[in-house]
View 1 (tube, one colour):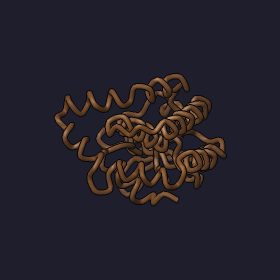
View 2 (view 1 turned 120 degrees about the horizontal axis):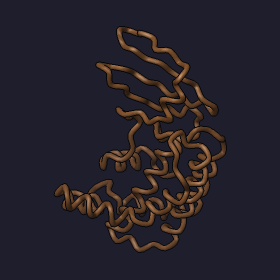
View 3 (view 1 turned 30 degrees about the vertical axis):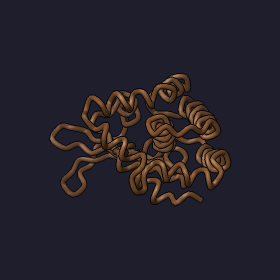
View 4 (view 1 turned 60 degrees about the vertical axis):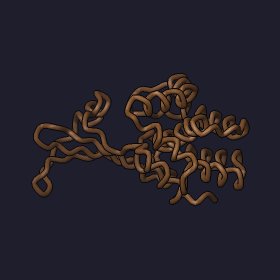
Length: 200
């Protein structure tokens, strides 16, 4: 199996994925409509347990609400894994990784996750929106890197130690289709809200 610690470290190095949101959506407001705030250790907090062992917690500090999702299903947080696959698609383009089998496997995985998310996401999202994002993610990543002057760093992530070149090499050794298919089979094996933390 892919050395997940190494892989996650590479993904984290680019700041992908977040388990906390400072501005909860209306959907989270609706979820918590009948859940009172409690004061724990001087902090206003409330918590919900949803199907599939998903925990949603909110804290209110100075009038600002922070929402944290926690997938305790044992299968990984669906939206975080999606972000990782989108990052791999982006970096395969940025790093000029010409591997049609890998791209096909990643797009198939994104499509399956998109279908699951459309059924199960707390915040409305469609499979089509996710696929559209996947199709343009490389171009968007490059544009963002140019606009915030991080293109040199992005290119360095292609070839540097424990960079994406090595990550893609590891995927090939494992068998890209086998790894991605098996991971997604497990990820989507339990119907539950599609949340973004933690990944694994």
